[in-house]
Length: 79
Image (cartoon, rainbow, N blue to C red; front, top):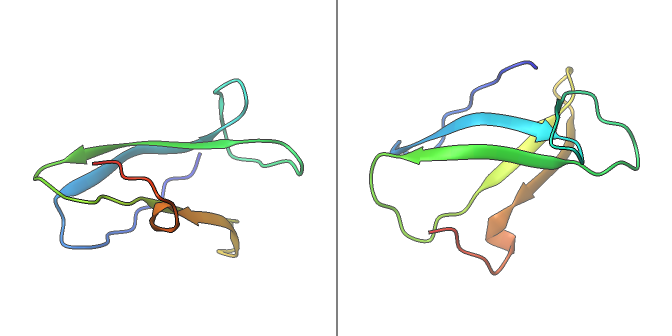
């Protein structure tokens, strides 16, 4: 599974082991239409934050955006 890295903000957190998994929890890197997948990652915080939000983007190998989500659009807090 290819790795990518994007640095945002002023630091204080590190995203660990991002991956897409199938319905069995197996890591995958080829998406099939009409199947359900989950995005998983862990976050290591090195300082305190309030009202934490998460987002992700899935792109193909050419960099074209396939899907994305931002929890700022939801009424959920993770901190």
